[in-house]
Amino acid sequence: MVLARAARADLAVTGDELETMAAVIASHGGLEPERALLVAEIAEHRNELLGPSEEYLATREFRRVAGPGDTERLLHCLFAVTAADDSISLREEEEIRQIATELGIEHAGFTAVRALFR
Image (tube, rainbow, N blue to C red):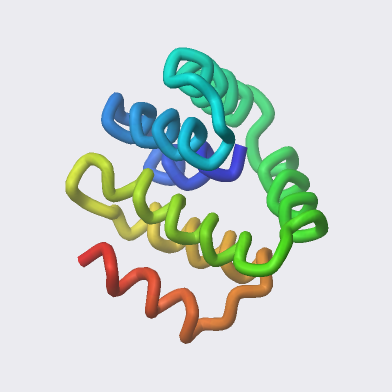
């Protein structure tokens, strides 16, 4: 849900972004690629249907259950998904910044990860 939130920030989820979401889900979730793509598609559709209120709840729940380093790893994943189409729009970056704030990531941590995706 959080990955879809970042991808949809510019009001469109590209095929490249969806594929990257699936790859992230497969590698971090231990799912087979076909199942990971299904999960990514479900998250994208759920995000489209339920919108902002569900998005913030998902981010808050992730922060609650996250272990050491999980929020930073998610930040990397968010930038990877939004950069999948070779650009990160200003709206996508602003959404990721909001997510980082909700996750308790300091500005310096945000900018350090953002710099990796220039």
